[in-house]
Amino acid sequence: MGKAIYAGTFDPVTFGHIDIVDRAAEVFDHLIVTTTNNLNKTPFFDLDERIDLLKRVLADKPGIEITPFSGLLVDFARSTGAKVLVRGLRAAADFDYEFEMGLMNRELAPEIETVFFVTRPQYMFVSSKLVREVAHKGGDIGLFVPPAVQNAIISKLAGRGTGV
Image (cartoon, rainbow, N blue to C red):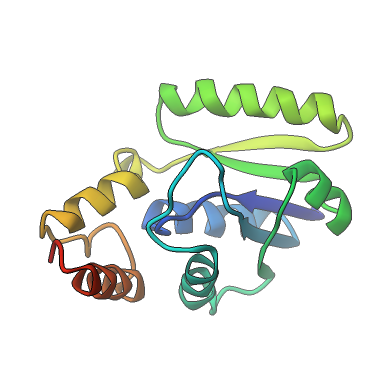
């Protein structure tokens, strides 16, 4: 069904993100998973680290390309020939933000559609922010992120002299 883009901060990538990737990859022939530096967020992992982690946890999945982007997502979509933006929804609060962003993208690029994938119930409460908070306080995050991500978080926290 063509090419789609799934963009997110992925700081860190969680099992919820991976679930959306898996399901979107079943619908679209080619899925580009992408991230960028967000001016409104101070990331735990820098852009290169997030791209590296995405490549490590998605390496075995066919039809998926992982790359960073800069600028407007709709301009990136145009440059790749993608006609669909994939977004994940966990709760009503996500919908408000995603709906607003979808309308803005529609105004900027009417030829590009936004589709929403509703998360599976077991991932509804999992957010990158909560994963980072649990890790900072020494909690087990193995239920929420793949081992490569868990190890990267633990290593980074140990390097900062905080948390685990």
